[in-house]
Length: 347
Ligand SMILES: C[S@@+](CC[C@H](N)C(=O)[O-])C[C@H]1O[C@@H](n2cnc3c(N)ncnc32)[C@H](O)[C@@H]1O
Image (tube, rainbow, N blue to C red; front, side):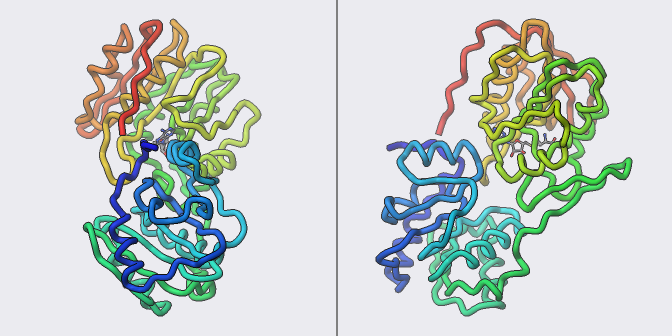
């Protein structure tokens, strides 16, 4: 089955090479695969024994549809653990520590050089004996016997961000702006007027930075917090502990509500995996237009260079730039055109 995933890295050549170089696939037991964002790697593994640990909802759903067992968190123990390296180093370390704690055999790490695979290999080698390495297709795979104790201090620790007013928020390795509020989001938060409710959608909410500002609006009755990253949504739940907040682990580009919203607020993503894709932001703009009622408005921040003005004008009758800096623009777009066609997702 063809898959539309965020990470179409051709890892299978590396895995094949690793088997040739002596990596032994256990004959029984489950194979845990952390953060697989592409099916390529999985074609070399016995599908019925693979359990994918994938918290990014679009990839989770695509792999489920393709017949894999997938869940956002690990479940039980594994005969082999395979980690597809994410780009953020703290996230990579946390996944390696988690997989090493749950594997009864080897841990295999696979990553692109551009994602820091060489540096991670050096760090792992300083702690455990690396049994084999292979280099192929601009990346590296290496494996070692699982040793939870040697890697325990890499385990994910909740981090906190403190805002200008001294409020503290929980974040986690790998979530967007895990160390500090994003400057674009801060610009948007400062530009938002009051009276945006009663029903507001925070699309791609991350750990809830914009949500904290929205919940200060007395007109707000319901805040829909929509986020594809499971770990980020968990942080948002902790940061937005308010009975008006409803949490949705969902792909924003497919998200629907039974009733139209008054306001959508977003700082849309334009990266999936390693690829920059403004197309994702266009999917968010379509979704916002679809979610809003005829009198509703979208408030959105984006890097100036991103090609969003034409898309906003195609989907809304009224588009204004509320604030502009050398780096960002905050747009307000009102009066969505009715019956917006759904944008087709591309591989
Ligand atoms: C630029 S960040 C903004 C986060 C947060 N709103 C803020 O201002 O700090 C975009 C967010 O969208 C999330 N995201 C990416 N693709 C998504 C999708 N298809 N559906 C829902 N959320 C998605 C990312 O995980 C990330 O948290």
